[in-house]
Image 1 (spheres, one colour):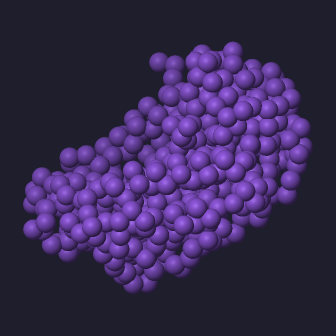
Image 2 (tube, one colour):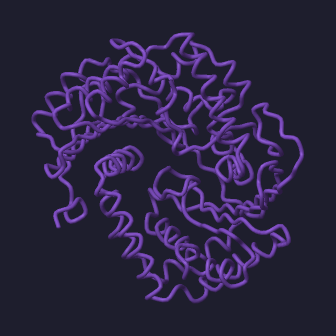
Image 3 (tube, helix red, strand yellow):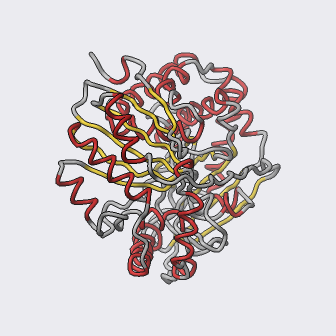
Length: 459
């Protein structure tokens, strides 16, 4: 079978004089091309007092550009039989589309045009502030478990504004955003040297290079912002917080721990990823077997790396989470104790070799299936190139996970038990929840459903 995972992809890199980094991944087995621009700015980089601005700016990038009126981008892509989207993450924002291979130049023109000069107007800004506010209402304020855990857990686990605030934003801060704010944000973060252009699919390297130079080469070079460190000390104790939820049918809880830095300890990070799967991935996973099918004290439980459930999607600091939903009669402390007991067992004895092999095989199958889709493969390559400087990580991941040993997973379990953590408890309540831009009960005003904060239906 000739599929994306049966071979290492051919990767070509070059950098334009204006600083734009380019990654080409030709694959003649697919009849389409996928184009993405990953910009090195996420909601951890947005300015204090402007929560939600990175996501708001993602919306603005879909409102027309230097040469195209509003909605023209949509018409050009959809008229070519293509699809497109954008999303805001902790440490990057991406814009991407997939079109028939013959439409490569169209895709490159569209992405270059808005990277050169998006159409920033007062009308567009006010319109998109309203769109984002409605997104917050739908995805957080009027939804069971809205913002759980990605909005509600960080302010318990972290102390600094970049790590603790939420990326959907506070209503009043969104409303106070100005065109000067938007222009400053664009000038600061959307410089060509602060982005990676990834093109994958049925392409000629020489032809694609010439087209990229034609459309992106004349974008003026601008200073690239120095990315600050967002590092914080690992907690030495446990922190707890309880929030009411007027829409939640059952209580829930989340545990948050700090992960190793994948840039300096990738094996340790991946051991935590497999630890999460040993605990909750599949009916035979330890917490699933014990708490769902055995004791029956939770209705749902999951564990893993990343606030959005995707490993290697953020720089340090990153978060290991355990989330559970349980019946009202169950004391949340009983669930917490069970998690601690299973972590202690794993720290002492580690997983069985067969148990870990089964989990690794499941991971590999899922990752291989993902890489067979040109859009997923292109986005993974671009994100790893931007975050870690090595797109190859996206392809090496199944093999790296297969090399993790039971002893490394045991060490990961012991590491979690040896550090402080955040414990977030969600309590259902029939109390009135006013829609004022804050999530009831938290110390942080906020927003939404990240990772996949997109612009697909924002017109």
